[in-house]
Image 1: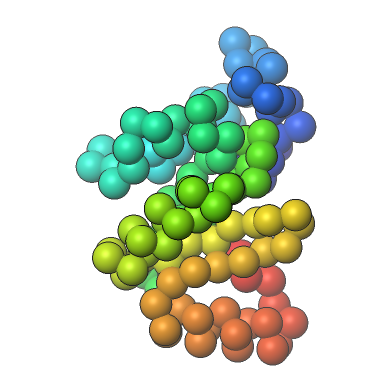
Image 2 (image 1 turned 90 degrees about the vertical axis):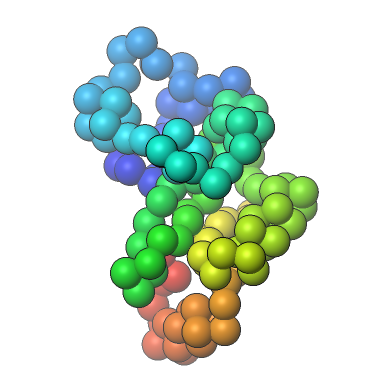
Length: 123
């Protein structure tokens, strides 16, 4: 198990070893939804959303990584995140059917295109 990577103990409905979960990374991890001043609504609770949102950095600025907690992000979530990204300038990464994708401002898009051209992973 490692932070930001889907855990094999997560099934539909949440963590199957929640009471016995390890200190690291599980108990030490804080989903972006739970952070102070989180921009995300209460409906983004991972067990309800089916996705965990992780606060990461891009060019020393906040960005987000959405990882499966039972499912890939759906169209409604992607639209919410795209609108949020356009208003805030904060990019995000996500995965659909194993394909790694990203959304963000033009400079972010340029960075991701250059990474792809060099054969580097998005995240």
